[in-house]
Length: 196
Image (cartoon, rainbow, N blue to C red; front, top):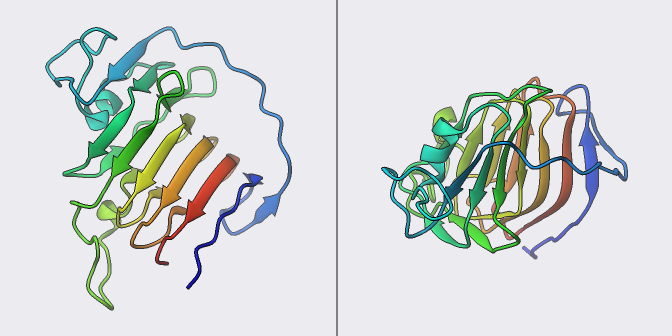
């Protein structure tokens, strides 16, 4: 099966099944008041500052305040458990997960369960996705998600922006948006080599 690359700007409205393609212009957003930093050499006991970063994205997700940003420093983050995003931002205080200053961030899900799953097996819902999301008002950008059971798995997600993501070589779908998901924007997604 040949690898398929695509780069599109799309907007999902109504339900995830109603997928329309349109070019979008997204106005710039102001830098969040609070930024938590994550780096490969960090420690989850640190304060999450640029000089004392956290080690895991999961810890930062649990600590980011309303309207805050998680800035992930360049490097590879090998996951031992998936990143669960279940807390929502709001329309006036969205949450952001992004690479820091254009640095290359790779989230590697190879060590997660069901990578790969046995032929005919079903992946438990909570284990789907190196990034498993059931939340709203997030902006996730500048990340490369590889070798997970799914790359990004988003169920019942609303009003999120996914921008400049690469999902490749995952054992199922690179990017899965489903359930009662509405008003999500997917911008510049490169998804290829996934085994769905």
